[in-house]
Image (tube, rainbow, N blue to C red; front, side, top):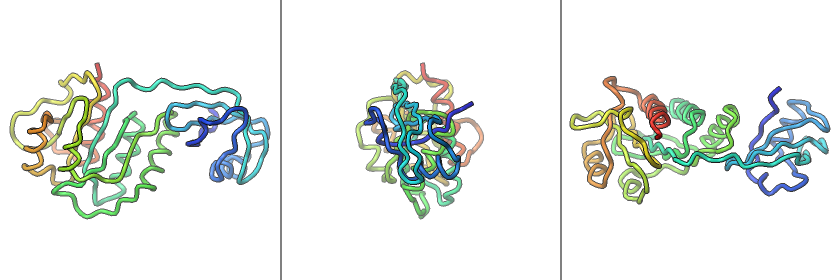
Length: 235
């Protein structure tokens, strides 16, 4: 039977005992109706895996005893998707959930020339990442910050392969044929794609133009296709 799995960002400091957050305590005691000595899994989202047993039941401050602690090795090649935010939050949230399940390392929301006005709630988006991490039984939470302005973001140095997927005509490599040998960042445009100016600017500073196939994909679909190809192509 799979143990209940919870995110506790400070559990890496735990030694013999650890007090669960109010939300985790409530879920354990009031929702799952767990009792003393029953076991749970904890992670800090940075590779820590803890097996713990309930020592003191409390709906707000449940105490657990640490049974074992280990560090799950991280993927030695990081995969980052920088993607245009969408006006439809539900579609962007779907992308976040599925990309996390697939093992993405970092997600950068982008504000581009064609980005429509959208209400971006970082706290809600991070909760979606946490839920997807736990559902897929992973120990690393993808990094995500506030939306970045495209033209400023791409000027930030990046040590690794830099790719930009777009629908403009011109010479492009088919992404599944690109060998990923190191950390990689893939740029995905919003509805309406990147502007020609943005594509030119990215190429001038070293981004390689790639194609995701012949079909024109929605942004969130392109993001998932991109994550999948990058994960499969890591060599």
